[in-house]
Image (tube, rainbow, N blue to C red; front, top):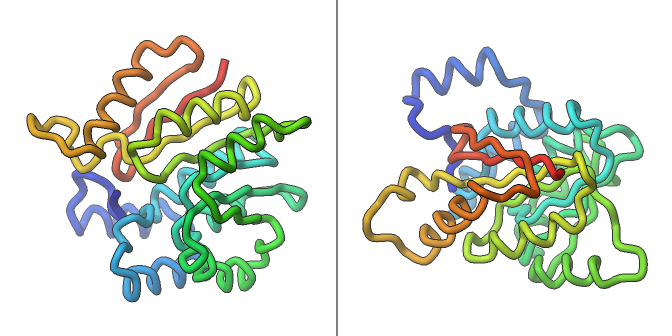
Length: 220
């Protein structure tokens, strides 16, 4: 979890954001307030990662997105701003407090109607969709929640994201701790997830060093 890109010093981060990121006023305000007021602000993605996700929405032509792990809604805001008028994000999180914090900024940016929150353990929401009579079909998924359930989230997304759709998975480098000899439960889960994807022939794969590491998977 990181609100800065791994390996970039402050000067280069500033240059990158000044020259390569078009952050809306509402997104900037939400990011800055989260950093100032939320003790878990390190869970927020960086502006450069937000810009990248926004570009992925536009490149894929996505209209329907599932987000697993919304926090205060910064990433959802970036993606919603890139969606067409009839686009929709189904935002899954366990905290009403955190998602409610971002709602004012979604409204200010004029995208609140594009974001539907689901406050429950995400696997319950995903499984309910999969087992429903008419499961939703998504163009894109963004996974950025508890690492121990990454494998479960990914498997569910493979059932819900259309062939040719994109699954983006955050924190796959985990601050570099994936290389540590002694690993905690979250790190172990990420390492196992990464190893499983290496030879997963159900997707086309690219792990990128954006943010805290972002794996991109195109569903075959």
